Length: 492
Image: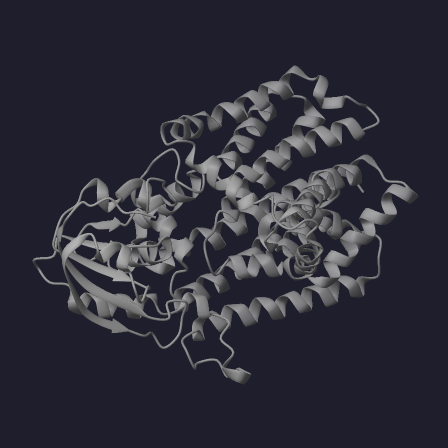
C-alpha cells in the first residue's frame, strides 16, 4: 500500500471513529439529561469539593473536584452538569486510545479499539455517574500514548507530555502510580533493557510527574496527611487472610467490567503469549495492564477490592483485545462482543431514565438503583421544617452530610458536621465541624433513632418529626431542633 493510500485509509477510519463515538456521546447525553437517579453520596461530596477549590480533599486528590467545579460554573448545579464530565471524558479517552492503537498497529484496529473501549460495560455504567476513575482513565490513556511516542522518538516534547499526563493522573487518583511501575516492568522485560530507564529524558518526565503532585503533598502535610491515611484505611490489611472469597468475587467482577468475551480473550493472551512468543508491542500492552490486575488481586486476597480498582488496566487491555479480535481470531468474537455490549449500553441508558421506585418492571421488587434514591425526598421534607431563625444545618455522618449539602443547597443556611471525638473521619468533619463554630438554634438531621451523644450536649432538644423515603439507602431520618449548646466533652 502506498503512503497516499495508507493516509486515505487512516482518514476514513478516523472519520468512522469520530462518527461512532459522536453518536455514542449523543446517546449518553440524552440519557444523562433524563437520568432521574439521585446523586450517590460520593457524587454529592465531589460536588461540594467543586465549590471549595483546594489542592487536596480528605479522601482523594483534587482533579475531580476541579473538573466538576469547572463544569458546574458553566452550566449550573444540576445532576446533569455534575455528571457531564463522565461521558465527555470517556469519549476523549476513546479518541486517545484510537491514536495509541494506530501508532502500534493500524487505523482499522484503532477504530475497533476505540469502539470496544466506548462500549465496555464499565464505561457504559460509569457514563451515568461521576467518579475519580473518569479523569484517571483519561490521563492514563494520554500517558500511554505519550509513552509510545516517547519510546519511538526519544524527544523532549513527548517526555514533557508524558510527565504532565502522569502528574495529572496522580492528581486525579493515586492509582496512577501503577503507571510508573508498569513502565519499569516493561523496560526491564524488554530485549533492550534497561531500555528507557537509561534515558535521562524519561527521568525528567518522572520528575515532572512527581513535581505535579507536590501541591497535593503540601496540602496533606497541612492536614495531617488526611488523604494518605484514608487511602491506607481503604487498603485495610490486617483482616482475615487469605481472603479467597474476596479474590473470587473480585476476579468474577472483572468479567462484568470488561465484558465476558473480551476478558476471556485478554486472559487467553496473558497465558499464551509468554509461551508462544510475543512481539514488543504485545509485551508493552501486557506490561501496562497485567501488573495492575495482579496488584488488585493481591489486595483482594489481603483484605478487599472493589470491581473498579483495576480500571486502569483496561486501557492497554482493550487495545490488546482489539488487536486479537481484528487480526487473529474469528470475526464472530468481535461481532458478538459488540452486540452484547450495545445491549448493555442501551439497557443502562434507558434504565436510569426510569429509576424511580416502581418504574422498572422487575421481579421481586428488585431495585438496582436503591442506593441512589431517597435523598431528594428527604431534603424536601427537611425544607418544610427549617425555620428562618435556624442558624445551621447539622448532620452526623458523611453520607447524610454530602447529600444534604447538595439537596439543601438553596436553604440559605451553613452546614456543619458533628465530629465524634478528636479524630477527623471525613471531609466535612475536616472543613466544617460543628464544634469548631458552634451556633444555635440547630436544625439537626440524623439517620439514628437514638442520637443521644449529640442531643446530650444541648440543653434543649425538640423532635420535629421523622420521614421514611419510599426507597433508598436512607431508610428513615429524624429531624430535631437543638438549642443552647453546652460544650460538654463527649465521652466515647
